Image (tube, rainbow, N blue to C red):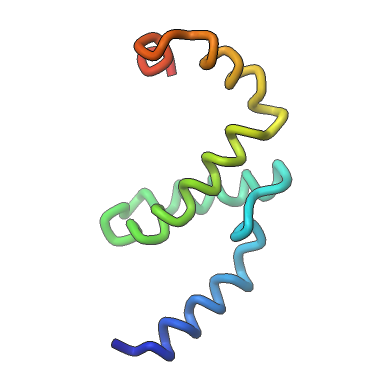
Length: 86
């Protein structure tokens, strides 16, 4: 295993991804969605990065004001309806 290369690549990713500590603006959200769309085109090859990025997107969607109405709507449904309606 090339530990130095893994560390270097990790550091490069941290510099390139402003939302690595969370998404704080709609623009960052849009950037994260564009990146996720690109990653899922070859999900098997990108599964590590998808697993990293998905919870960041999910957390933003659960708390951002622009998703409040949708989240409230889903919350009001029973579990079966929310899965089918989403």
